[in-house]
Image (cartoon, rainbow, N blue to C red):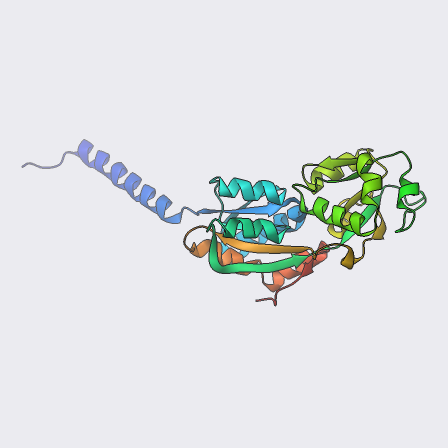
Length: 261
């Protein structure tokens, strides 16, 4: 059969080394966990994403948009392991399509509905003078047909018997952040948003808080998405309920609902 020549020995060594490197690379490849989250959670979830990478060595990739948009994308087959919605109805929408793993849905967060204005010096609106304070200017809010903050806002205005008066002067955004981007650029006199948004938009000021009884409870459910449990996604699901996540969500103004793990 003969002896392996020197040149052939040199060829076999690099090939063996390359094969070993490929096997190691495959073994150490980290699966990306996809988290689709309501736009109002952008800052908190972005910070938690770094904590997940550090503490769990899991690559978490968040995507932010309006809850209805995200739910419809998931239903259409978009990659998703976790869904954090600003509206329980959109989580139920996915449950009705058997896209939430049974027993893996939890009410994670709550929020407060507020009216924002730009300058502290301008006369503030209150529950009785909103229409006169608005004058002939615009009210900015999320689209009630698609955006949870917009739906809660419409409910609150209907409760106060103001919706019919102000709806023709209202400008709708495709998400709460889209609406606030318009408002922060100078459009409109007031904006309906969450108290967590006031933590992010430091140049905006709270005119007043809507009574909790004026709208349905603001609940953010978290769910595991798919047909079967992904172990790494389940670890992130649990992590979002622990003390570290609680501290981050609370810093941005959310009320944390579950008992920390």
